[in-house]
Length: 83
Image (cartoon, rainbow, N blue to C red; front, side):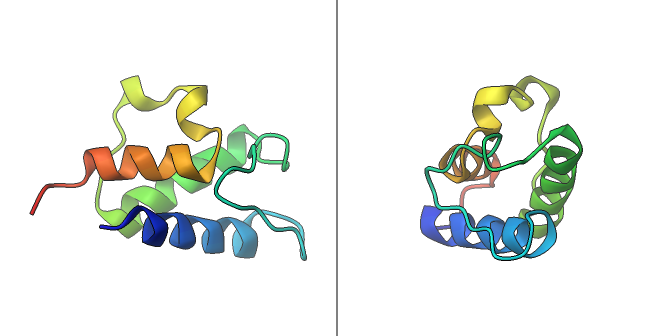
């Protein structure tokens, strides 16, 4: 799956379900600075696992993997089965 599609799906989820109305993020936005806390991170993980059919292993649950939409998309791509 294309990285841009993954980023767009996660971006839409975060903007519609987590951030305050009107707030936006882009692929390189520092999510912590945008207001994403540990509770929100858990919601994002659950969304990613449901949406993309992957399971994020404990060793991938490190802050640098949740820093930006780009880093999240990289993890999703890494975990998705190859066609």
